[in-house]
Length: 225
Image (cartoon, rainbow, N blue to C red):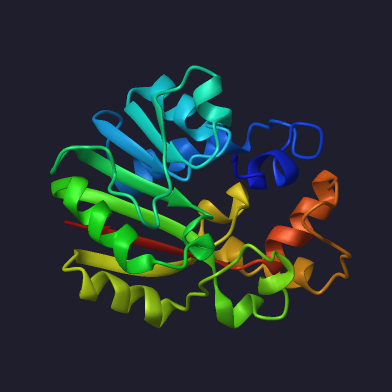
């Protein structure tokens, strides 16, 4: 049975394709991965738009997801439940692993991180973004598929437990203007004060996106094997 999360919450009518994923992928490649080549794994790749962009800018992109949406588009996606199945890749296979807004949907974190460490090559990069529980606890479970909340401290501890090195966890906003200078992050505090009625199936204008993503402070965790 398909995982309906993609088709319910990320169908093209409710969440049409935008230029944001391209901006995000380029930012991650240049600022965190510091490369535009190599084998990249997108864990819980959803519709596959990030895979498409990473492939376009030079990566050999692979994905894993429970849904077949990305694979049906012809992308190199393995359909599997990453919580309890081995990743279908050899040891030390990937240069980069990314997990955007997905780790909070996982209950069996130990299995996922153990497998991620196994398939990542020595010196390879792992990056995950997720909600900051301390900033989002009032709305975290509005998405009933959320299973595991994270704080900065718990994500750092996760990296320690699985022997990752050179790790750090920082606050991150899905707002490109905040990436240019730390000063601009302060502007989000103003927008976050504005009211917004929002559920997972709310259609958002650009201004409502600004308010939403100012409120939804994220954690970005980066680590190396």
